[in-house]
Image (cartoon, rainbow, N blue to C red; front, side, top):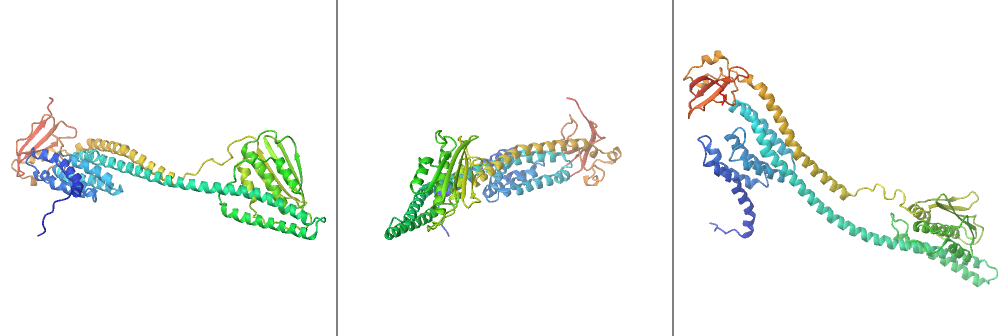
Length: 522
C-alpha cells in the first residue's frame, strides 16, 4: 500500500485557484438548497460535484465546463435562469471566452442550446414563452460574459504581441545601428577612393607626359613609365578594395568637400591636363546648400577623373552657371588623342554613384558621348535646400508595424462585437417575442364544445386530443393560486379575451376542477 504523502507548497499553490473557484460557484447552490421546493431537488444537489468537474475541466475543455451547469439549470427551469447555477454560467462562460482560441465552436454550442430550447419548451412546458426567457438568459448570463472573456483574451494577445514587437524592434534598431556604422565606414572609404583615385589619375597623367618627354633620357622615361603603370595598378587595387566595402543599397556620401571647383580645376591643370573653366556668373560667390555644393564638387571631380583615365591629353572644358534657381554644370572633353598611355582599369560605377549623389541633392544628371568622339557630363542642382523629392514620401510599413496594426484591428473588432452582438440579439429577441405575442393567442383557444365534453375525474391522457397543444403562460390577472398538490392550466375562450378556461389536475393527472375565470382589476 502506497503511503499518503503530504502535498508540498508547489502543489497547494497549483490547486488553490481551482479550490477557491469551486467554493465561489458552489455558494449560490448552497443558499438555494435550503429553500428548495419538492420539485427537482436532485438537480440542485448535483451542483456540487458537477461544478467540481467543471472547475477541473476549465483549462483543457472550457466548453465542456460550461455545458455541465447548463443541463441541470434547464432541468430546474426552462428559462435557464436559476439561483443555483446563474453565477456558474457567468463564470464558466467568461472562462470559456478567455481559454478558447477559436470562437466558432462556442457559437455552434450557443446555437444548439437556443435551437434545442424551443422544442423543449413546446413539449414540456406546452408554451413557447419560456423559450424567450431562455434566449434572454443565454444572451445576458452566458454569451455576454463569453464576449468579455474573448475581449480580454484579444487584449492580452495584443499586449503580448506589443512586447514581442518591442523586443524585436530593439534588436532591429541595434542591427540598424551596427549596419549604419559599417555603412558610414564604407562611405568614408568611398570618399577616400574618389579623392585618391582622382589624385592617382593625375599622377598617371603626369607620368605619361614624362614618359614621352624627349628631354629625358631613356632610363628616366622608363622610370616614368613604371610610375604610370604603378599608379594604374594602385588605382585598380584601390577600386577592388573599396568595391568589397560598398553595399548594394549604399547611398552616396553626404560630407561636403572643402575644396572649391576653382581649386579642383587648378590642381588638374597643375597635373598637366588642359582644362578651361567658364563661369557664366559668380557661381562660387554665393553660398550653396551643403548637398548642392558637395554634389557640384563631385560632378566636376568625377568628370575630370574620367577624362584623365579614358582620354589622357584631351582638352576639357568646365562650365558653371545659374538659371531659374538652379546651378548648372557641364564638363566636356574632346576625343582622346593618339598616344602611348593606356586606359586605367575602371569599375564602371562612378557615374552610378554620381547620379545617386545628384538625386539626393534634388537635381538631375546626364552623361553620354558626343558625336565628335568626346564625352559630356552635365547636372542641374537646386540652389535652395530641402528634402530630396520622393525620398521620404509614403514609407512602406515594416513587418512589425503591420503585425501590430493587425492585432489592434482584431481587438477593436472584438470590442465592437462585445457591444454590438448583444444589442443585435436583444433587438431580434424583442421582435420575435412581439410577433409571438400577436400570433400565440390563436394557438391557445379551447372551443366551448370540447370544454363541455371534459368530465371531472377523467384521466388527462384521454383529454390530450381535446386540448390545444399550447396553454396560456399565465392565468388572467387576479386569479387565485391553485391548492397545494394541484396543477392548473388555462386556455383562452377566444383570441385576446380576458376570460379563460381553468383546468386543474391532481398529482395522478386526474381532472378535479374545471371553471371559467375572469380578469379581476386590482
